[in-house]
Image (cartoon, rainbow, N blue to C red; front, side, top):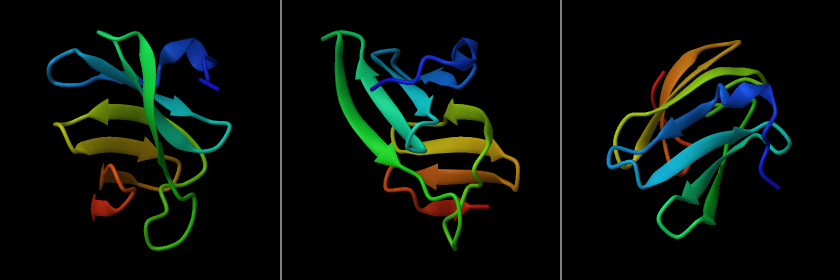
Length: 89
């Protein structure tokens, strides 16, 4: 289920504007929707705690390139890959 709360503040487009990524607060993940095919593609899970923890309140989400996201949360700012691993943070 897509999470459409929060005025879509945590929505970002990919570099080619073919997909958008939306933060899903229900299960703490990033959902990808393909704009060309008008369909859900994949969900990328995040961890709230632990070595790859991003916190439980995400304030900002930006797509950096085809494989990274910048996330600003209540505990840190991080670059993460699509597997949920912190690259820089």
